[in-house]
Amino acid sequence: MSEPTTAATEELTVALPRTDRLATLADARAAIDGIDAALAALLERRAAVAGVVQRLKPVGGFAGRDPERERLIVAAMAERAPSLAAGHLAKIMNAVIEAGLDAAERKNVQDAPAGAD
Picture 1 (cartoon, rainbow, N blue to C red):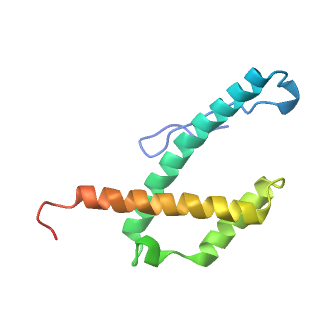
Picture 2: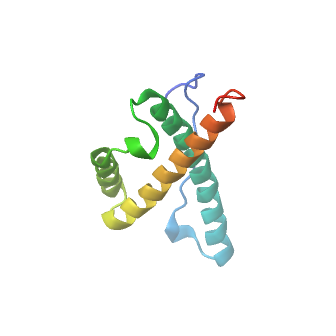
Picture 3: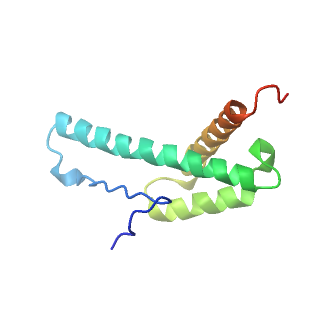
C-alpha cells in the first residue's frame, strides 16, 4: 500500500517493463524512454531534498560531503541492483551527488538577496 499524497510527499508510480516482453527495438526504446522520464523526475526530487540537507548541515556544499554516508548509499543500492557492480554505482552516485550539490549552490546564489556579496 502506498503512502497518501501530502504537501510533503508525492507519489510516482512507474510500470517497470518486463524485458522478456520487449520484442522489438521500438518497444525496448520506448521502455527506456519511460524509465528515463521517471529517473529524471527522481533525480530532480533527489536534488531538491539534497538542497534541504545542505541547508541543515553545519558545513554544506562539497566541503560537507560525508564519504561514509556515500559508501552506505552505494552499498544499499548495490543490494537493490545486484547486476550493477558497486564500483559502477559509486561512479553514478558520485555524479548524482555532485550534480545535486551544484544545483543547491546555484539555487543559493539565485536566492541570495541583492547586494549580499
